[in-house]
Length: 584
Image (cartoon, rainbow, N blue to C red; front, top):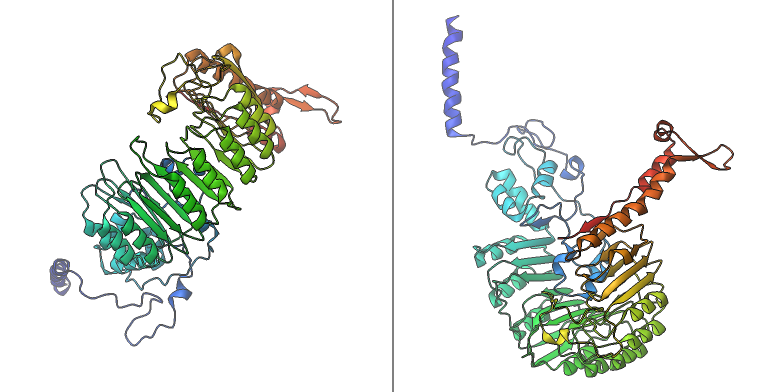
C-alpha cells in the first residue's frame, strides 16, 4: 500500500514543475487524422478534411467584419446627386464597375494547427473566428501562440478589402506594417483622424499594394491633405490596375495631369484655384469634382470641362460643384457630345439659366438624373425638361432654385411619369423669413427671386404613381400640401414653418419616414393623425369575412378573426404599417 502513496506526491511535484516549465513539444498525434505521428505518413490533404469555402476576408478597424458595407450616407459630401443611384444594398463600399466582378469563392488551405496549442479548435473554425476580427484584434491574436500566428499570416495574405481607420496617435509605420502584410489587397479605404496625408503615405500605398484597384481616402477636419498634383499624377500613372480613386481635401493640388487607361471612377473634393487640369482617361465613366466654397477660387472651369470631355469620351456620370459654374461651362460640356452621358449634376451654379437647360436638353436627351441645384432656372426651364425627358428622367433635383414656383413643381410631377426622386428644397421660400441653412453659407444663394409674379404663400398638389422620395425642406412659403403618391417612401418637410395643418392631406400608404424638424407642433400632430387614419381601413378589413359563396362581407367575432386562415394572416402582415416621424 505504501508504494501507491509515495508516487502520488511525486506525481504532484512533477506536474507542478511541468506547469512552471511549460510545454515545449507539440502533440504526438497527427492534427489531420488523429493517428500517432511516429512512423506515420498522413494521406489526407487539407482540402479533404476541411472543404469549407470562405469569401475573401474583409477587415475593419472600427467595426467587426459583419459590417461589410460602408454607409452610403457618410460619403454624401463627396458627391451629391450621383449618390442617389446607389439606393439598393451594395456588396461593397464602392458603387462602380466592381459590382460586375466574378463572385467565385476561393478555397483556402487552412494551416495544420496543433489542437493543444490552439484551444482544441479545428483549423477551419479558428480561421472563421479570426477573419472576423478588426485589424487591431488580428494583431493581438498573432501573439497568442504559434498556431494563431500562422493563421493570421494567411488571413493577411488572403485579404482583398481593407477598411482602416487611422487613430490620432498612430504613426506612419502602423499603416505601412499593415499594408505590407496584405500582398493581395484590391480595395483600400483609409480614414485619417488627425494624421496628415503626404507623399510618403501615397508612396507606401503604391509600393505595398501592387494589385490595388480601388482607393478611397477620407479625412477629418483636423487632418490635412498635402498631396500635390504632380504626386497624384505619378501615382495614377504607375498604378495600372487602379479603377477607382476617391480622395478628400485636395486643396494642395494646384494642377494635375491624369493619364490612365484603367481608371473608371474619379472623385476629388475641396479643389481650389487649379491652374492646369489635363485628362487622358479613355475609360473614365464617372467623375465628381467638388470645389471649395470660397469666393477667391480662380479655377477656369471652361478650360477644365473642355479638356475633360476631350480626354474622357466615355463619361456616363458627371458631377461638378462650384460657384463659378456658368452658361459658358454648360456650352463647353455640351460641345463634347458625350453619347453615354446618363447622369448630370451641376450644383451651385447661379449663372446657369433656362438657356443652359435648353443646351443640355438638345445635346443629351437620354438623361436619367439631372441636378441643377443652386441655379437660376425658372418654370420655363422645367417645361423644357418635361418636354425632352418624359421617358428617361427618374431623378430631378432643383433645390435652392429661387425662381421656381409650385406651378413648375406640379407640372414636373405631372409630365414625368418615371420620376422616383425629386428635391425642391428652399425653392418656395418666404422672403420675409430669415432662415439660413448650415449647409449653404454664401450670400449668392439667398438672393430674392427674379420673377415678378413669385407668390409668397403657395399650395402644392402632387399626384404621382411612382414617386418614392420627395424633399421640400426649407419651403417656408408653402402653406398647403396635398399628396396622393401611393409609392412615396420618404418625405422631407423640415423647416416648413408656414404649412397649415388644416391644409395638409397625405394619401401615401407606403410612407416610412417623415422628416418634420423645425415644424409647428400642430403640423406634426396632423401628420400623425393622418398616417394613423390611413392605416385603420386595412385593420377594419381584417374583421370582415366573405360568405362561402363569396357574395358579401360579414362581420366576424374577434375570436373567429384571430383564428382565420393563413391568407388572413398574410393580409394582417401587409396591413400593418409603421411610419417614423423625425422631429429632432
